[in-house]
Image (cartoon, rainbow, N blue to C red; front, side):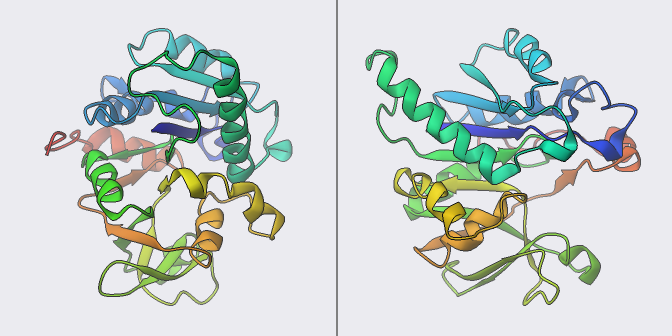
Length: 264
């Protein structure tokens, strides 16, 4: 399994902190946001490579961070240099999957004992959130379901629902419908930016873009995919801390206590 970390945004609402520095490398406590995410995921021993998708301006910061980590981490520069010219999350995902396919044809197949040589599955996550629960729960859930998967949580605020993905599910967690930033949300089940693609579904990102799925919000591809193939939605077992502006960052700094039961 590969883990794609979406980190190519410019975080303009966090200026001046992020004017010349990437939000995923801001510290929460004594660790960066990416440290919290990667070190937790690594406890599951399911991911053999982390691919951080960066814009051109911040790629060198991620390279320096990756050099300090024991995990196999690849930094992919998407070539953009401003918020106005950004590719959008779904096109960044497409770029990363295409790049991995090229690399898999060039590199020796015996590099790793647990490497997916031809068509790996993908854990796709936003690099600017911290969680108080382990993402290993989600990985195990997806492996048990055998389908592409999303997470869901109950969002009581009608206003906040307008800004995120919303799902309708059946009694077995199967996604019946998913909308991204709908003006008329159907339920109060909101979707955080954490996704699992099966190997087969990861190859359909380009097809989704060609069919007209949105490319800015990362959930747009999943909203399209739900109409093509079964997708399941795990209820989030804890809290997600979305660092969107200076106020929310300061709040996370005060209140975040780390990940509970990371190996359970």
